Length: 341
Image (tube, rainbow, N blue to C red; front, side):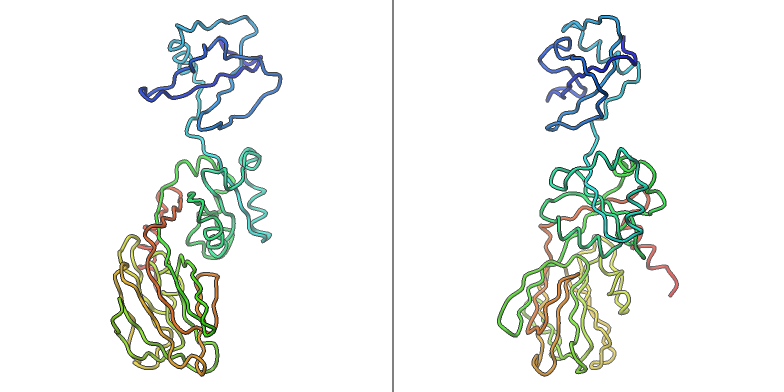
C-alpha cells in the first residue's frame, strides 16, 4: 500500500518490445530507497523517475509481482508523466516581458533548464525578440513556443494564458514548420556575407537617390531595370509582415512559393511584383551602386553598400514553432487575408 508518509523512488523504463512501462531489471524491492525530502519529478537520460510515498508499514514487492505492482499504481491513480518536457525560458528585457515571467507558475520557472538541455525553448517577448531567439538557437534544432509581450505577436501565443500551466500548454500545442531563406550578399568591398532570413530579405536605398535594380531568376534575367525605393523577397511565414505592408500578396503556409515585392516602384510604375517557385534562386544586382547605394536587411542583420544579392530557400533547415491548439500559424495566415484594410 502507498500513502503520504515516507518518500521512496522507483525508476522505470519502457522495454523495446512493450507498449507499457515495466520495472528495471533490478527488482522493484531493491530499487526502492527511503528519501528524507520530497523531490520533484525529474527527467534523467531519457527515462523518468516517479516519486511515491511509502506506507509506514513494511512493504515488500516481489520481483514476480512487478506487473501487479504497476497495475496497483494505475488503479490508485498514481500517474507517471513520461511525456514531460524540459523547458528553457528566455525573456526580453522589457518590463512587460519580465512581468509575464513573474506570472508563470513557480514550478515552470524553477524547473527551467539551459537551452542546450531543453526539449522546448519558450520565448517571452514580441515578434522581433522571437526572430532574435530563432536565429540564436537555430543550430540546436529545438521547437519554439512564444508568449506575446510585444505589439502584434504574429509568431507568438496569447499572453492572457501565460499564468496557466506552461508545460501543459507546450505539451498540448500544435506544430507549424517553416523554412528560412539563404541570403548571400556581395558588398562594394568585395566581401560576401552569408546570412539566414526567416521572414524576409529587404533591399533598401541608403540615400535620397532611388535604387536601380536588375532581377534574375535561375540565372535568367526577368527585369533589366527596376527603379524603386527597395525590394522584398518574403517567405510564406513572412508574407504577412513587411511584404503585406508593401501591398505584397499573402502566401498560405506550406506554399512552395516566394514573393518578390517592390517598395514604391517608380519604373515600371505599375509592376506589383512576382511569385516565384521556392526552389528558384533569385538574383538581384544593384545598378550603379556607388551613386545609388543600397543596403540589404535579413531580419535583424544589415549589410550596407550592396553590389548583388542571391536568395534561395533552405528547405533542409526546418524551424518548429508551437502554438496553442486551434491558433496555429496556418490559421493566422488564412484569417489575415480577410482582415479589412
